[in-house]
Length: 354
Image (tube, rainbow, N blue to C red; front, top):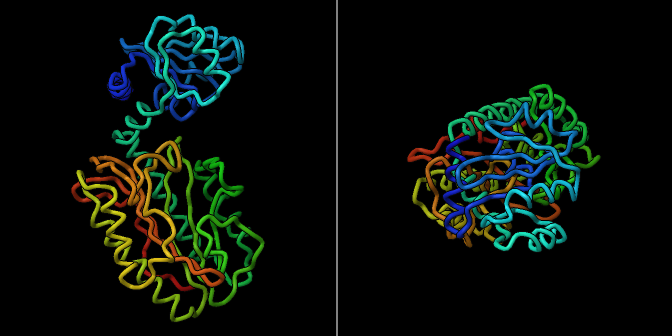
């Protein structure tokens, strides 16, 4: 935790700030070890304070590491307590609430809104974070094994999701709370698979379906993310050809991952191969993204990215092909950036036919 706070202050200094204030639970957890409703404060001397409503104080004291915990009334009371502590400081905050920022700016002369120190620090994972991500990935592999045994023709997408989530929760692995979906998982059979972020439906699996199974779940605060595409019975020659193209594309992308490599080059390694096979127009998203306390965080693995990979970043590599009204295919691993990347998922990427 001490090193995390040093890194946070280092990035704060780069934008001329000496104090960090967080309202976001992910950043609060990263800074303090406590996930809940509170404001986190990190000062230039490393002193860390949690300002929490009374209903959160007990848990904040129990879960946090080396923090002062003070009580404030929910809402305006928390803000007042914060202002008293930082009004003379050069403050950077991740606050996204307009009215709160207006209130803060009235009382703190030197304050700016920026997520840069938080995201820049969180990009590179420490040993504790990597250990948690590896465990999360192992559980996801176990869930793919369940898919290979429990998936069947006539089963609803929602029924398979129930089986998988029951197992996940038994392993203390939970929904990420990702705001852009109504479901914890993506399970998309047949034509539904052509929608990269398909909602789980009541559609029943049919013979000849490809089933995109994207398992993105949170363990001890951290998110692992992997996808496998299964076949039910005999699939079309086009589907089989497309699967092998995605598989080789992903292999090339994984091979491109190394420290100091541009993220855009990893995207290019995947995308160029798919384009050479005349399926480029069917690869309709970026190649990957950072993972950690959020489902999608820096770095972005896309042609637009200007970020270079660093050792111990945690990213995904997930090329895909999506043909409207027919099928979708995605193969995705979470990995840790090294000279020889640690690919955290061991479940086969050969096509599993059920």
